[in-house]
Structures are given as structure tokens and as C-alpha cells.
Image (cartoon, rainbow, N blue to C red; front, side):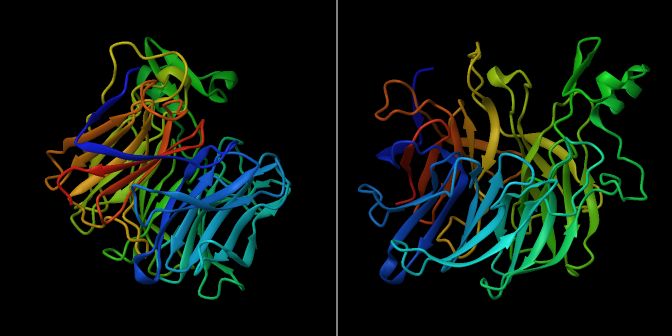
Length: 430
């Protein structure tokens, strides 16, 4: 695919370091005097995370690299709130360690200092995939635990809530998973995507079909990527609500006013014909609307169409898909690489992030980065697009994995198959 750029200006291309691959973690630290540092999680060893000074976004500079303890673990995700950094530890195999979340003091971003570690390892655990620091004294994890025991191996991560008011002495205060997923649950297993499609078609699933990733009946495919908590969003505009993306389980709005007893307010399940792999569920402030991004998980968009859906949650108990964001699908999708929805800008606090809910941004692998006007959520409009190609400087393989939009209108995006970080300026913001 050739490069595309519209509504954005490429101001810098930064090499994060040979062997680095951009993960699902971009976060910013703003220090005294306006010093800005971008923290980037790594998709694979040897790097854990990389820090770059972006005070002048036209002249970014890598100032620190942190390495992992071995190739058996990856960071993948991180979060920042003011002077605290949280970095996930996800092991490749169950039972391996370290697996959990490590906390750092980043008051000096050039020399992060270890504060503490939350251990999520165990016989059936690969640790933690995602962490969110809401600025309310708590961390929200997509994680497993020593006592995690799913009935179906596809159902990996649950929500775990940590008290991080003292990062050197972190403790769990609550957890949530969809009832029926674990061996000790009294509730029956939730209805799975293949079962919904089979019921709609009036057919019976074989055991092999029930356990498979994909089944097809009369030209309609169903995908079961597992019921696993993926991303959690808790914003100060709705401090008692967590918006949770749960892969094939869909999107959930949770009441977290009592974090020891989390409850479901509303849920959005995908209809049978949608492949559905809920990745990021973000409320648009207190508007009653949100964006639910899928994750395309198959090469060549075999699980097409994974999309970004506009969700009307004004009636919290009945959230509904009411639209979608335009994605620039090519006439012919390449057979290698991912093409489709993925990460969204999540409007974090304490990071110098863009927090006006009139704009949304997303990273869509081979479809690049898009910025949208969502001031009228029922009529979203793309205003900017960047798709790197072979004619763009840098060794990018065109698989943009994450995006962060700062309050200066600078877009940061990283490539999951290379060490490239692109810095782009949104036209009309400066």
C-alpha cells in the first residue's frame, strides 16, 4: 500500500531502538517547566519500555530504555498518572514469572526508579495484559491470578482492581468476570458466539465446532476469540463507571462505586454475523455515547469487518450500536499483515493528553491512523488520516498498533513490527 496523509503533517520519525516493536502502550509524562516524555511499551523482548523526550516534537530523542528479565515475558501495555508509571508483565507460558504489574517513580523520566511489584503469577496465569491508572488511587487490570480457573481456555483475563495509593504496597480490592466462566462458578457458561449463530440457523454444534476459533453456516461466519477482559476505561466524568471491552463477550458498563462488589449496569453483545473482538470501550465524557473498537486478529482481515462502533449508552442498561467510524478499506486487502480496527485514544488524566471529547483517534494496523470529529456522535466525520508506505522514511512495516493524542494536537503512533514512532501534527490545532 502507498502512503497517505491528509489533515496531518509528519513532523518527525523516531527510531526507538533496534529490536524494539511498539506494543499497546503509549503514555505521556509532563514534568516541571513543561518537559514532556512519551513512554512506549514493547511488543517483545529484549525491551520492556522506551522513553523519549518530546518536549520539542520536531526533535524527539530517546533518553532511556528498560530491558525485560528474559524472552519469556513481555510488557505490551503501560499507564502513567503524574509521576507514577505502571507496566504490565505478561508471560508466554502459564506459571512463568515475573507476571503482574511493576510500578516506577518517573519524576525523573530519564531514570525511572522501581517502586513495587504486584504479583499475578500462578499455575494457570500468564499475568497481566492491560493496566489503567484512573487518577482515583486505583489501577484497573486485565489480568489472571493464582486462583484463576476458566472452564474454557479461550477465556483468559478478568478485571482486577488494585489500591495503588501507596505503589510500593499495592493490594487487590475487587475483581469481576462474566459469571459462569470459571470452574467454581454456580452460574452456567454464558452463551457463546458459535451457539448464537447455530441457534439462528437451527443447527447443532459438534464438540469440535464448539471448541474452534471459527465456524461457518451457510456463508455466515462466527468467531470465538474468548470472553476475556481486554481494556478498561474509568474517567473522572463518570467516576463510578468502568467501560470494559471483553473480546467476544462484547462491551460492558460496570458500576464500580463499591469496588469490592462490582456489578453490571449494561452490556452490549455482538449479533451473530459480526466477528466481534471488543478491544477498547471508551466513553465520550458524560455525553452518554461511547466508542467500542474491535481488534482484527487475523492476517489479511480474514475476520473482516472488525470496526469501531458508535455506542449510544444514554440508557445505560441498554447500550446500542448506532453507527461506525469510516475506515479506508482498500479494494484488495493484502494477505499478510492485519487490516482493521484496534486501539483508540483513551483520554487519560494526568498525562497531558487531549481530553476534549470532540475528537477521537484510532490506530488500525495496515489502515494507518485516523482522527475523527465526533462532536456529533451520530454523525462522526474523518478529518485526518496517515497510512505509512514504502515511500515514508523509516523501517515501518505499516502495522500501526497504538495512538496517543496530546493536548498540543500532536499524534504519536507506533508500529508493532518495527521500532518506528511517528509524530504528526494535527492541522488547525496550533
